[in-house]
Image (cartoon, rainbow, N blue to C red; front, side, top):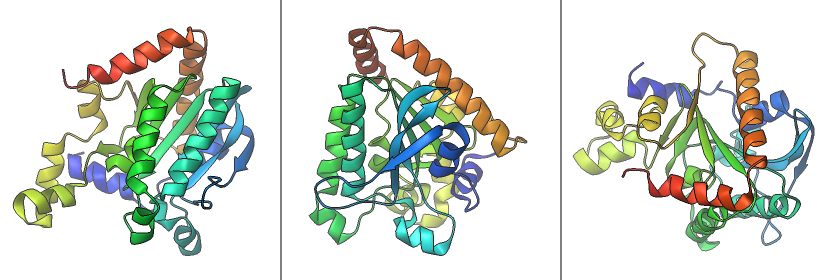
Length: 257
């Protein structure tokens, strides 16, 4: 598949995202709500559960399936309260030394007036800062379209995985084409230049693992992801937290070097 074909695949309305993987991989999941500042954001599903009997905190982006659910979840574009809810749950996980799993799948943070008034940029920036020094293992998985800072807010992790047909980029191909060539129709050309596929990002060291998905069922994909997450969490939990933090810091320092 070409780069833009993977962009289209990542955006497909039938593509399973956060909640579907939570239900497939976790047992005893309990969802938490609210950021304790403003309200709750349906675009971020967060809570605690068990992954192969390991207690974990999960923070997932969710688009919804029906039109009513998608409106409730703002089509998967989180607001500041979503990112603050994510940080609240992450700090709780740090207190109890529970590993954190972040499931990414959004075209980007909501850019409406209300979100800007409530500090969208600050909420994303604070997550970037806090997750970098979070004293518990963090594993992020890009399930679909990982767009801009809205996705990166949950992407500061010890290990980042991607599904084979997911994409992860600082800007959408359409946005890039509009800026560079004043023509959104050149999005396929922009997608090639952005190097946003899992294969490209593995080459550049932005991610560590690709989860195969072509010609596989959702059950097979989620089973593989569950196995990879379990392995990573067990490895990170056995490591001194100071070493884990050093590795996390160095991981981001070497990207692009």
